Image (cartoon, rainbow, N blue to C red; front, side, top):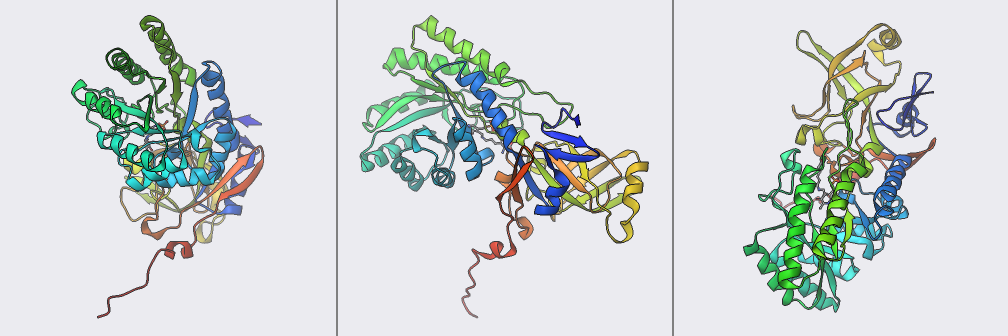
Length: 453
Ligand code: LLP
């Protein structure tokens, strides 16, 4: 058996492609396409690495899975079974997490525009932490906590004012950001005053998140230094102890075979060393440190299968390979110019005029650059530009790799296309985790009413 180093979990045996031991062509035949496929083995492997490199190496630490990356009850059960808490960012994510059996105390609730209903829901449910994003929210959480007769633990989510080297839509740590509390003394003093007026709040510590898909830790390091000096100021000037320090997520993954990504240890160790040195130097107790990876756990655990519907050669320009999915199941290329790797993982005989051409083509023709186009009525719906494919033909099964994070989660019904099914695979076994949407599902919320003529 030949094992490809990228993507992880993909193996090729007698020209058949397997992911976590399950044949991809068979999956496409059984469950249809487009199809999200998630490998439980890879998810658990990431959690195991996280335990080894962070939780066990640095006692007293915590890890929360940022469930916005990919949230299903199955996924939540896996990550909690692996000892992780869960980060949620809306009432909906909180609802699903609670329904999946996540213990409320293991949940951290985020968001820059949490509604009163969401705050009430979170406080009543007993979430472990709420990350405060703005000044009004301090008073609004106090009000909900007082109503519920509870004390609510909070973190201040601060914006350290560092730029991260990632797409501007997923950069969150710079001062000009809609997220978090700007770390300017004139601003932060208001928050500290507010705390004094809120007896139902327990200030647990600080949170920062500098951006996503980061391939080096320089932004995290710069942010950490700024946040630590703020923590020192809180202790010295206000007697406020930062018991917890949550450093957010953002750890980058591999999307392309030629790309590398730092290991979690390479990312985390310098951060932890800096905090330990700060604690010794300043004689402050070591805070309980936490991280919130999303993409790093789910991203490389997923792939998406499509069927090739049409191949259109525009002489002297390019060849478009159109598939049965696109921006409705993966908005990332259109939104962030995200790059993906693709391969043909299943040949079929094709239909009509193309029947019989396929095998001949596959064996005789060398790979040629093509553009993979989605099915949506939008010129920008291009999944991959210029990828080399050997004689793609209608009916072939095409796979995009590293689609486990922010694809299923960001899917839409644009053009009223039903959202794909999701299959979880593990060690040669497959099970349906989310069923495919039906045309009936698409109409469930439509009210047939009229004002008359
Ligand atoms: N913690 C906080 C407070 C966050 O805002 C995020 C992501 C995370 C943790 C997890 O970040 P990760 O480890 O997954 O990078 N839709 C975009 C990514 C948006 C990230 C938003 N916040 C994409 O597809 O690239």
